[in-house]
Image (cartoon, rainbow, N blue to C red; front, side, top):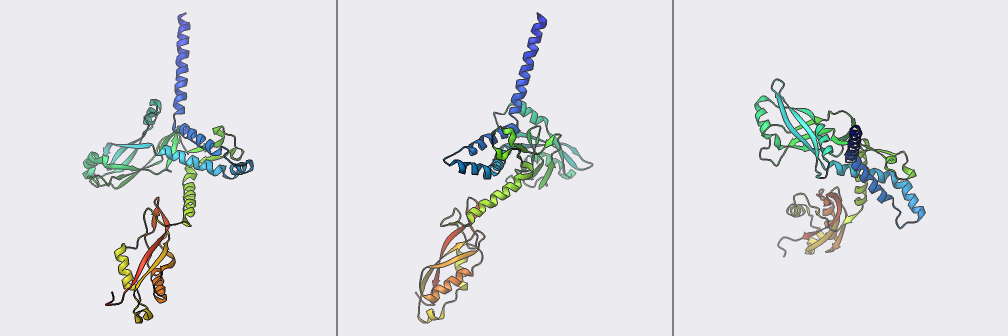
Length: 346
């Protein structure tokens, strides 16, 4: 009887261990990203208010790009919730370096203890060269060093995200800046079982014949995909002209320098001068995203020769600081008054 009870207890423990391991696997970065990819792609692939032919054509022509973009977005979202931690260890005075211990954690209170512990187990070490005279200062002020990571230098280690390259720089906002004499240091990942970040569409359990067998390799393709996507976005806005932008275009040095430049470079037309013509010509033009000026036109006329000179003047201006919308340089309409005033005139 006792033997039977022991077997039952062992069996229950075994089931609990299996359930615990399965739960831990579900909570890994890979599984969480995969879950997000599936959710977002299913949302994208839903049939909207579209004819069957249009729907099938959308799936045929856009599925791969949509899946790739979702893979990039979901991976980045996960990466940006990661923290890379560092701590100084032993100092080797003979070879003049500190051993640096590195580990990864996540800003997620809901993350299970099993996954958190698994991350901490996977710490690795690097070296940072520091001369003996700076060793004590370095140890005291190591906390001013900040991790600067990008979205691309990452991999999976047992389905958990780790940076393949860690770059650290001194925090410019810290009062102890440059006190330890290290402007930048880099550490490469040195763990076993490193794997590229990739996602197989077939593993999602979604029926889409146009993606059968397709694998998106984030490690190899994400940067290229981002550059292509960003360039397409820039092309979309390149033909749009804003009447007002969050940051309006500016002449180099501002309005004061522009007025001085106009005054120094204007050539008063002889005919207008002989006839005592004075006044203002209003000019509208487009400041392109590269700072060039184009589409110059008169919106308020004065006299033909003055109008012509105002156009010449604006077209000969140096490049401007372009306007910006959402951080991107954009084309913006701008208006400038060109004043014609004779000496002694009112």
